[in-house]
Amino acid sequence: MTAKIALVTGANKGIGFETAGQLAAAGMTVLIGARDEGRGRAAEQALRDGGADAHFVQLDVTDAKSVQRAAERIEAEYGRLDVLVNNAGTASVARLRGLPSQTSLADMRAVYEINVFGIVTVTNAMPPLLRRAEAARIVNVSSEVGSITSQTDPASPLSQMPASAQYPSSKAAVNMLTAMYAKELKDTPIKVNAANPGYTDTDFNDHRGFRSAAEGAEPSVYLATLPAGGPSGILWGHIWKADGSGGYGQLGW
Ligand SMILES: NC(=O)c1ccc[n+]([C@@H]2O[C@H](COP(=O)([O-])OP(=O)(O)OC[C@H]3O[C@@H](n4cnc5c(N)ncnc54)[C@H](OP(=O)(O)O)[C@@H]3O)[C@@H](O)[C@H]2O)c1
Image (tube, rainbow, N blue to C red; front, side, top):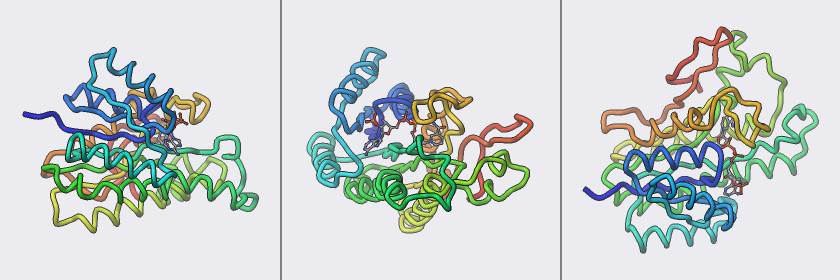
């Protein structure tokens, strides 16, 4: 059987790097989407050193031309794409604590360019490749922070966190995009789901997260390897409870 082909955006570090490693360990050929060639090649080498069939693909999710070039290369070399993990993201950490009333539109647009428009750019460049796979899986890396249900539930630890506009609303948009792509593709074998990594120790939050990057990758890998009978159009991953009794499961939008 030929190996499945998986593209992970923002795979040069953090959760994306770990996701690529775990998909490779599951037998897939992994395409390491990275905007910077040096960082992408270093990640490719590190994964290969660990035994992975890993290949760097230059891809900046905010640059439609680079996304198109990546799609053309995948077309020429593999002819299909079995798994797309839209992982690249930014929190603009330095500005994260800005209250909604103090949010600048420039900051907000910068976050949306990557987290929201980036997903649309990449996903919309891939349909012919995804349709040629036997049963493609699209995973949008979201966050419980984008769950309106969690943010407004007094029992959720998230309801105690300071209000901010850019990042949570960008992930709420990712959740809706997930539901809408799943709706569009409901009569095909393609499944589209959103992953919640949980609060994960990466550069993203200056390593304040309480989950390892390998754990943060687990929801993406679970959704990328769903069997035919699995769900489409859900938010799934780490469930954060104040008493620590969380685990994995489906989250409310
Ligand atoms: N860490 C958490 O607690 C947490 C929780 C929930 C959800 N998430 C989500 O998980 C995903 C990965 O985050 P992480 O924690 O692994 O963060 P990270 O370590 O900062 O990694 C982010 C990745 O995204 C890439 N990226 C940023 N802008 C890009 C662009 N324009 N084009 C292509 N790649 C770009 C980065 O590349 P460079 O190295 O070139 O910057 C990097 O590879 C994000 O979508 C994030 O929102 C994280």
